[in-house]
Image (cartoon, rainbow, N blue to C red; front, side, top):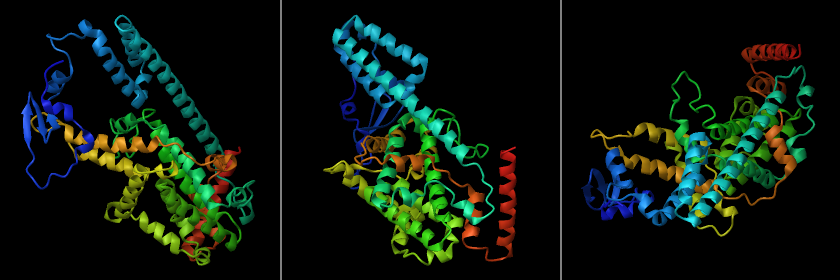
Length: 441
């Protein structure tokens, strides 16, 4: 292979952020590549290619048996880490062509490549089935969430199942939330983070910046967060009696506490978000019957001030616990996902891909790789909790009220406090009943 510097063997993105503040960093340049303390920080694309590919003095076909295992290793890493790349027919065709070429030089590598392709096809099939199930679940939930004609308080509670009838144990409920979170995390590929920001930006026509189909699992996970928040608010606003609403509030505060203990920060934030929605927060008489000390502590933990300092401290603690874990439960880390996406987005937007001299800014990509690699380690954990199928099904498919239905339910629970709220209630009743009639024509 082409001669490289002795430093090239020490590339390690995980140590990019090492603290060298006590001394001057050593900077070197070799063949158009710039190093700092033996770490590649920038370079031209041409120099990188020259480092990685054969030259006229070295042609792979002459020593296929020697390099075949390395090619297999590279392709194994690629197909395991970025399987979505091979949904492209051209990529799959190239992979099969490579398998055919290796067959002439090394039988062991040919067999390894065949096993690699079989694993890849199984993974792509599983991914496809998962995405189909998500689409089916979304369609079912959308049909069930159509606006209802809510003429009286009694109609709000006419549902076959209520959360406390299904599961009244906060720990078990938090475990089922963790099952859903970890399953959805496991299907998000690292390439989805790249594709999510490749075309669209938040400022583009105020539309979602997720590329259509290219980041479907990532987007579905964000949608799950929103659904859970509205489900929490729906459950709290539904009961007729104040004492029942208070029981539901207390239950979800306990669930949120268990989520924090488990390391499930995404469900924790979704529960807090649901409780902080106006239809829930305005229920003062209901809140007065609840001891909110525990809830106040949890809200503080997820406080956005100082760039979510309290949450980031708790996340570091959970990550440290995971790295030294003795049980699978201690390994669980489920980040507040929307914040993770924002962090990656602003890192991507805030740092240039190329420096003024035209070099690729490898420092930026080391840091991006560091964040995504940490996420990959979190998503590989297998959920250790026993499944409760009824609770899981309820969480995924139970009808959820929209904003208007929630607001009306809140007014029916605790009446309007002023003329403006009374006018809003009348308007909401009219709009919801009209919508219901239109949907049933």
